[in-house]
Image (cartoon, rainbow, N blue to C red; front, side, top):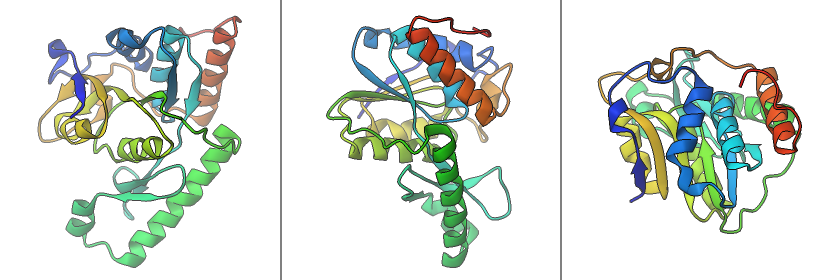
Length: 237
């Protein structure tokens, strides 16, 4: 069982972070035990990037992207029934597949659609760079929240297979059920704002929350690289 780092003062509360940058700074403070250590830091785009950017600057470590994609239900872009990892392997929410009676043809069609989207995003945001072997490194993977958690689970499985040693999942906010399900799969799960209830939305933890564009992701990545190289970090911090 992994170790949970949360903030009891934030439990079951909404609007506890100003924005993703604020959440990233607070996560970095909660994980200060890792400052000064060699950490491989990955962000899940798009929402995880501004969170992880603040952590990269606090820890003074490079930031990389880890591309995973939600497999959307055929009739909505808002909900999914699983996720693809960077190598295109699927992880399904079998309960939802059964509940909605998805046929093998529907599943395959959505998987192929998601795979195309994943490969295109890989090309645009990572330029086709291969993921490095991790060789028992301490690895931290960051997103802006855990709803169903399937994209994070796909990321965790992928990082383990790449050889991650100590594995830390860091998110500002998460569903209590998903936190409990993910905790056995990682060494440390930092989730400051754990919330229960019948429904859960990542956005409800933030005063300011919106969908980032890929252009914004690229700008943030460039900002972090400049800052770590000793140049100006840019505006907005």
